[in-house]
Image 1 (cartoon, rainbow, N blue to C red):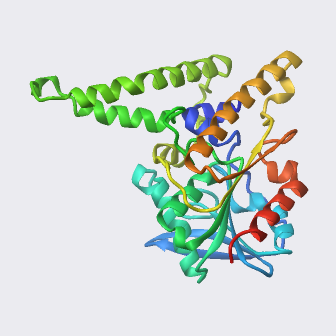
Image 2 (cartoon, helix red, strand yellow):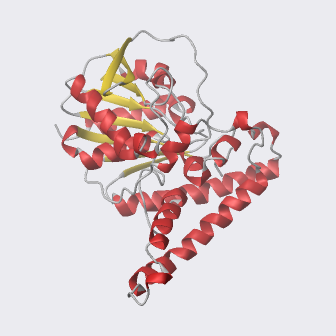
Length: 331
């Protein structure tokens, strides 16, 4: 189980993305160059350049996090690659456009990454995303595969990155069903709506399962009643802007962490911990299967005794696996 209070407010979609609160600003901890890259009129993103020799690598952080979340990891990765990091729009020192869905769709966030690559004159790179950063990886890999050598998902290959109808994605499924219901207007019958009705009925069992799961999570961890503890509207807009990614032709490395440490983990009893670990395993294995359905050739690595920030909790192992994957990519 990966639920946390912050994520529950953003529905299951964000729960799977991360159990992390927005990053607390702090002084730079590593030597790097800071750039402000314009990706569209009046929208600039904070881009970090840690330098290094070798092929370019671009790091994309999790939900609510800045590129600084990779500070230590990036420096070590720069011993073999030229490493950059991007703080997405709406976060940290990057511009903060109005939190409309169109400003924060997966396609828009992916286009920002492409714009940064164009600015830096990087024709092709390996993209590494943590948590919700997997969405940008899939967006760029789908729309501009010619600009990507490979994709590395650091506990990031969940429903926002790969969509499998067997498991679904609550945010996407609810949106699709809402749109389909809007097209079924009884007042306009006898127009034939049988196909739409069959499609809706086929989706209901999955939706019911997701809603039951969400209700159980909210019973276990009630959302905050204090408005000051609700997530920023930009993060809500990112959740609503998710898209279905059902095809990927690029080389993929997906690292899954078993099991995630929850912010409130210290308050859990042993029995609760065992239950949470079991639920986490079932949930994660469902998404491993979803990934296999979209990318049969994906290289999947399960790391036990890790937390969601697997590049920190298991740094040396992640560095080794990452370098081996990149070294094996076609030149």
